[in-house]
Amino acid sequence: MINRGEILETIEMIDQQHLDVRTVTMGISLLDCCDGSAERACRKIYDKITRSAGDLVRTVEEIEAEFGIPIVNKRISVTPIALVAAASDAADYVCFARALDAARAETGVDFVGGFSALVQKGMTPADERLIRSIPRALAETELVCSSVNVGSTRAGINMDAVELMGRVIKETASLTADRGGFGCAKLVVFCNAVEDNPFMAGAFHGVSEPDRVINVGVSGPGVVHHALRAVRGEPFDVVAETIKKTAFQVTRMGQLVAQEASRRLGVPFGIVDLSLAPTPAVGDSVARILEEMGLAVCGTHGTTAALALLNDAVKKGGVMASSSVGGLSGAFIPVSEDEGMIAAARGGTLCLDKLEAMTCVCSVGLDMIAVPGSTGAATLSAIIADEAAIGMINSKTTAVRLIPAPGLDVGDTVEFGGLLGSAPVMAVHSESAAEFISRGGRIPAPMHSLRN
Image (cartoon, rainbow, N blue to C red; front, side, top):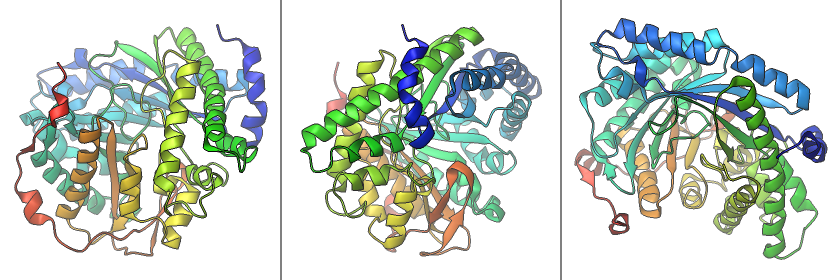
């Protein structure tokens, strides 16, 4: 059992090292909201979300006040809407996004995720309708998030979906051009998406999950950075052990919050996701952790090795602390949300190619990266394909969240504010991949997918 006394050890971490619970996310199944009438289905969705999560914000705020633990976001994830809307008579699915946003506003949560489709092996008509609805859905709602899974180790990569997502990202940027292409910050393209991810924009409630569940995402880059200052010059064995011990403490705090939220809401506890999710605040950066290991600037030679050590040690520490570690759990490298990454990108040390190499060993992928607004859809699709290939071959989750910033070019900065921060526009290769992307079809699954 976890008792309140354990949390006292983290007081300094909370007060001085940016330790927080990044999110308490309630997953809600909407499978029982399917209806032949889109209007009735949307009403059922609104009613179930508001009924299920009506007390979520109040309960989490009470836990925050009682234990003195900052809880940054309260979120909802739902069953991929392409599955729920498939039975309806809707010609497009924007109405479902509006229902999600209305329920979000009523419950007071910060984000709702699950305007999603899983198309790693092929697209149903409902999947394609949802994907084509994404630009309007994200432009016409405030805080609805969307994700599309285009590949997996077992299925390969659906290149028709990859090609379509390049065009969807371009259209989403265009429809939200007045906000710097903000709609794209709410859209993730996955390979090997997980069903219990509490972090936006990629959260959805998997079909194997219970009717409702509480998942918690914890974050502590500043805590890890501070801990490593005490072992400067020590061998990497010591560095890894220090990170593991720190991750253990952070995970215990997350489990305490998760269990309390579960008990008070009467909703099953799912997982703690121990992901080092940075913020734009100074002292809350994954890049600074890597530099504390001895790199002059994040992105220079040695960065991938340092990130591999960090990611592995975080996972090991979390597993020691809880039997319910899940989600993604590791290190995130979102450029716009990490002040150290932003500095390295502005200085030219951190480029898109280096970030791609780093995604081989981090927990997600190319995240919150701004590229020139003139970047073509085929180039965006090719970047997605590269990242999906890394995930497929390595049996890991990878993702792409790109923002082709309208009207901006390399060296400019797009501002989003809050946790989303600001992103320096990064260069992409000018040579075309259009002929490659236009082939379509499916890249087959690798040989090692045949594990039965």
